[in-house]
Length: 414
Length: 130
Image (cartoon, rainbow over all chains, first blue to last red; front, side, top):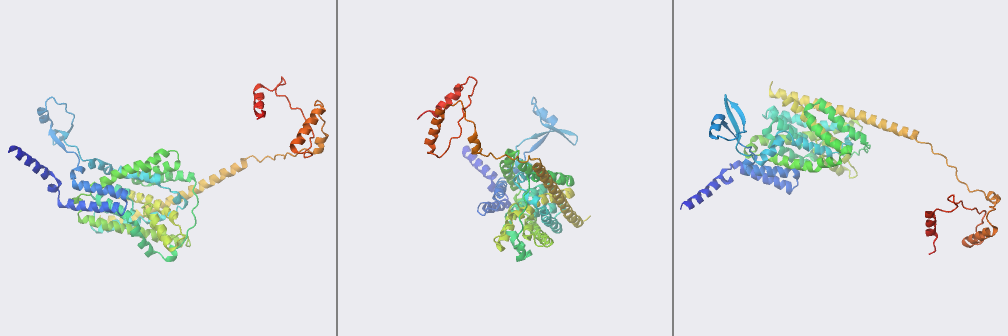
């Protein structure tokens, strides 16, 4: 009889500790949200490299919240502890609280995602992603036509306009800065800025940023068509001049020095971006350049995705703020696209019709998706028009521009 | 200061700084691109001026037949051997196709008046009958 009672107690204990008995209803909704993201990543291939790890991180943390919780530390008065543990070689850290000395004893090991998250919390992963992006990026089109920087800057206006919108909707300035940066259409930059300004919003902001980056081909074309005429969309641009190897080697060094001196808060992102690019262009460190582009980038993407997903717990995600963030993120993205195209039109007029305004939309830094969209919309009007390389200039300028904008926000708000 | 005021300041600062930095980069890139292309064209120019002028190689003209014909015959070669050589040439190239104008003794390769062993071996190998 006692045996059966113990057996039943064990069963009851296991059930009472299971997710079915302990999880709040919000977690179940988040589990469904993660299923939707998994579907979008696999079936629709919306940024699957990032969205899939985010979705799995989200799923795991809502199934088992302990996976993202750090180890517990308990404090024991030194005298009492030594009295009850005579002869033990005690190596725990000592802390003094209200004049009493305590041993800080870590009693439990934290969950896996808690430790992976430290790379996000301390701002390690986003710069390393930038290292890989730099190693993969050819800045040739930008060096060939440096005026593209204007379009890269114009597309960042959306960030600052959204910032005002977020303040009007009741977000504090730090939260508004983190939300505005979604308009830069640069996932690592958005995560980096949010980590520094409003870590509690990391989940919704990262999900919104990567979702909108995946939706670039849907969001941008209507805005581009609305703001341009058929004649403007049909403009053919002259071929870019070839760029020498020396120019390509000097570019990352010069940008790194200038931007870091002017905006020290952007030095980490720009420094890593330009270091990656220097490895690529110098041609003398092929091995590590390829590692930065492939293995390192892939490993960090997995860690970053899982960590960011693990911040999207039911309690954090299911709040009115998330809805506000998603709407403001979309607004920021649309504003960035619109200002890019409008400045493209200004450049078109200023150059006597030599610049196709469609390349302006590529100023948002979703590389290379935004440039591909410019090419596609241009070819719809004129099938013999090839805008891709021209659009790559503003596109990579957008990466530099969003890092500069991030530096501005951090330096003022942090 | 109200949040809205801070917001407006950030809007203005952000736009000015982002444009300022990127416009500065435009000028710097243009400057160094010009400097690099100038330097490279100068290097190329100096390369072309330093390159040695192509030396005119005098075309080797065949010696006039008259001169060859007037060449003194090698007295050390017996007339029968010259006749045999001329007959062999006539046989190979066809009767009257070519004219033997002179026959010279080849110089010996070493002081002993004999080819060295390796050269002799090479010649024997290359001239051996099938």
